[in-house]
Length: 185
Ligand SMILES: Cc1cc2nc3c(=O)[nH]c(=O)nc-3n(C[C@H](O)[C@H](O)[C@H](O)COP(=O)(O)O)c2cc1C
Image 1 (spheres, rainbow, N blue to C red):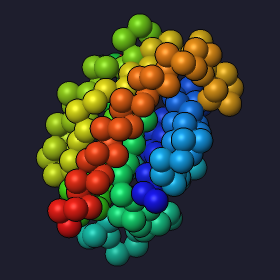
Image 2: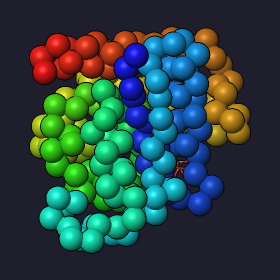
Image 3: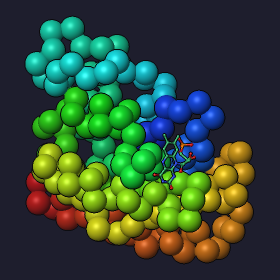
Image 4: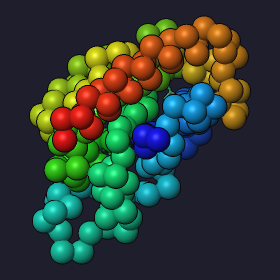
C-alpha cells in the first residue's frame, strides 16, 4: 500500500482549508487507495526559516520528524489556501527547510479559497518552487472554491458526487506518478 502524506498548510486561526485535508484523507482511505497521514503545519508551529535543516546544528522542534515524514511518503498532497494571490508563508517555510526530501517526490496540489476561483492563482508560484526543488508535480488541479459552503465541520462534502468525481481524476494522476517514480527508483 502506498503512503500519501497530506500537508495541511494553513495555520490561520479559524482556518477552513483544513476541511479539505480531512476530506482527502477520508476519500483516499475509504476507497482503499493508500495509507494517509495529515501533516498539519498548525501543530508544528515552526519558527520562521533561518537555515535549511541539513545545515542546522539545533533544528527546531519537530523539524527532523517532519523531514522524515516527507521522505518516507511515496507521494505528497499539498492543501493550500490562497492569500493575496500566493500560498501562505507557513508553506514556503517548510518547503525551504528541506531539499533532498523533495527530490523526485510526487506532489499534487489542491488549492482552496472562499471565493469563486478556488485559490487557483497559487498554482504557478507553487509549481515553480516545487520544480526548482526537483519534485515531480502532478499537472492535475483540484481547486475548492467557497470552502465553507462546500464542506461541513468534519470535512464531509455537501455535494459529494460532484466533488468525488473531480477528486478521483486528481488522485489517479498522483497514483500514476507514484507508481512511475517507484518503478524508476
Ligand atoms: C491574508 C488573506 C489573503 C487572502 N487572499 C485571497 C486571495 O487572494 N484570493 C482568494 O480567493 N481568497 C483570499 N482570501 C480568502 C481565503 O480564500 C479564505 O480566507 C480561506 O478560508 C483561506 O484558507 P484558510 O481558512 O485555510 O486559511 C484571503 C484570506 C486571507 C486571510
